[in-house]
Image (cartoon, rainbow, N blue to C red; front, side, top):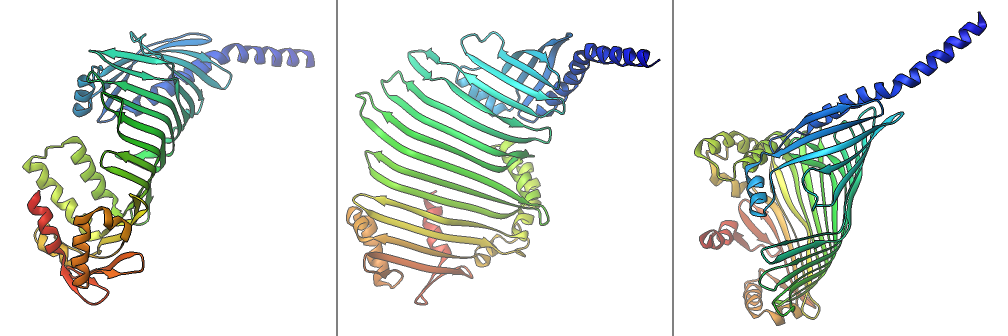
Length: 419
């Protein structure tokens, strides 16, 4: 009896081992089905065209159609299709599925996606592009071997790392665009229409050359960081954008150590999401769409938000310095602005702190004249090495440190008239 039980256990294990690849194939089929259905959105339509499931492997064909009219139009202008078919060879492993995917009928684009998907749906991916060269009507583009890799979960959480060593574009006119040292990374998830998490992109060198290969503009060591967070209790969105550039050279002059840190804070998530989606899907709004947006605009202002420049600084022409920080806030309780838009400016609060060095003003006479006039009127204070302006925004006025006031509307009118 003991021997029979032992033989039965061994037989059961063998049967399970023999059936397991079939089970993995079935589980994998469901996982891929769910993953494809989750890709459908207002911008893209995804579907499985064919799924041939075998014992140890499967052949899968999927179709992706760009339904966003603006993106589809841009692809057409660039000579690219808005519909893509992908062929995937899927291997059934013990606890995961391994797939290699390529674009159908696009042999001139050496692009391969390799994925390892666990049976719970979490996936590691690596998208590799070999040397790619394309010529069109005399213009040419070349990209060196590049890779996008990372991890994505069934909850929509995503990490990625991007590496593109160099891109070169040669135009018919003889001009040339060069980019090198592109690196990117991200960690977060998409929630409805906006990204929650962090992203970063770095560019080592970028230049645009004229017909004689003389630089029109060149940039070195640029970095852009973007982060968005959601406070679930109050349902507010905060977004921060940070740019740092070591050097920019152009025919208009050079800029060193450019830095910008801009923050949008305390935006009502429901209103913000609706307004972003409305504008994204309808760049030209109809009167009906504008009318539908009014309640969300009212709510956005009623709940309050702020726009803050934590830092804007640069060095211009022989160490000329410029630094500025400012903040503009719409206080919570600013009600019914659609019926009374004149109430917006008096409700605003904030502050301003800006510094301009003497060296900078030597190179920009028009700015120097304006600063000198403001100094005579005691709006700007002279310091040892430059000029400083500090002010608070109260009841529609900029109130300076000496008590002088300027209506904010008086500063905005020239800008509004020019537009």
